[in-house]
Length: 147
Image (cartoon, rainbow, N blue to C red; front, top):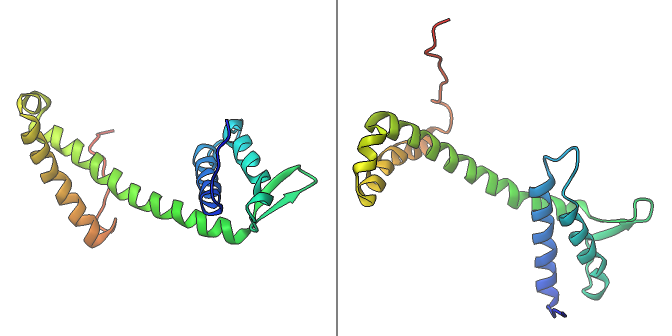
């Protein structure tokens, strides 16, 4: 199979593979997922056909590496994603916890899908508004357990 892509599409593919490889392997210390690394290396090896300038080949390691400018710009995309995901995930998890503990699983199961959605987002919207205004400043962890 042969795939033809433009220079612009190639550069987007390079960025997408960097992001994918980073997401899959950033926390892997023992055995990174070689599949993503191999694909990224193969695509980078084709850079000469697409006038790719922000990659260098390290002969000692036999690998292509992105320059620091590319990495900083691309990691910024990841940082933005992680930041947004953090607030969404925190809001959803706290809302779910309070939704279930306040209304109870049995009552929730008896609700229509629309009613569940509406009531759940009453909790979620409250957290979203709080976090938008104050971030984590008012977030406090407490322990109700008695030792």
